Length: 334
Image (cartoon, rainbow, N blue to C red):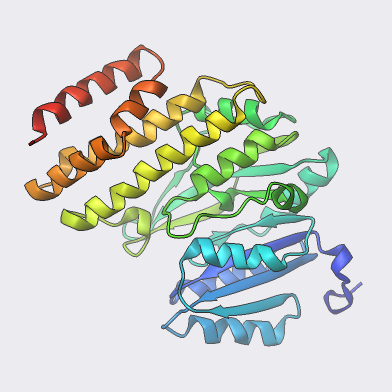
């Protein structure tokens, strides 16, 4: 059966790609995507108001490959773009790569084979960071920390992964059963950076069957334009740390909703305090006194200091938390 004849019932994977000013890296990404050994895909490119010609390039790809659909939207952020793609996705599974990264040729075939063989809700792989400046490559999750698994339930897998302290809450390292995502009405929160963290947490709390392969199949490029890799100071840093305040709040809310429904491993509350402590580390590096005070005020106004106390677990994290609470109370100006 040719791609052109492929009925929607045979779409194994919906690949949803938020696209915003991916520049020259978009061509490399698309080359890697179209070279995938898995052919039974639909490719949904959501052009999120690109101003660098990326949207026009996406439409050129669509003219030459019937699997590609392009949605043009005003700029609304990655969450709205992913949600727009989810609204029309038809595959058995769904995934969300970034338009400036690179996929290894067998990535989606490997994950689909795992998913179909073991009737998985989630299949995940390992990846690598590629530093564009130095050309250095670093494996995302060291195999000695987390090796390939058999079939696990979602909460146990998340506990095992978080315990490595190297696991990344990113949606681009896996494929997800679309029916489960739809059943949960699981959408990405507009305007929230690192929205992958609560999204993957809630999905794993509901997944019955998950498998992980340590095989490196995704290349994540580290460059200056990446939101998570930009250096921020002053009020830009204050605004950015507010996202982590919201992430910690969302994680605690998810834990509270599922308490009594799943086994609540210690790593789940630890994760709440861990995300909140990242604000404290940023606070120490902030050179602007006014911005530092604004961040401290946000910690107290949002109740993040109490949230960390409620969720802290283990001697080491207690030591870190008490050290930071002592500091922020000392630095606070009333």
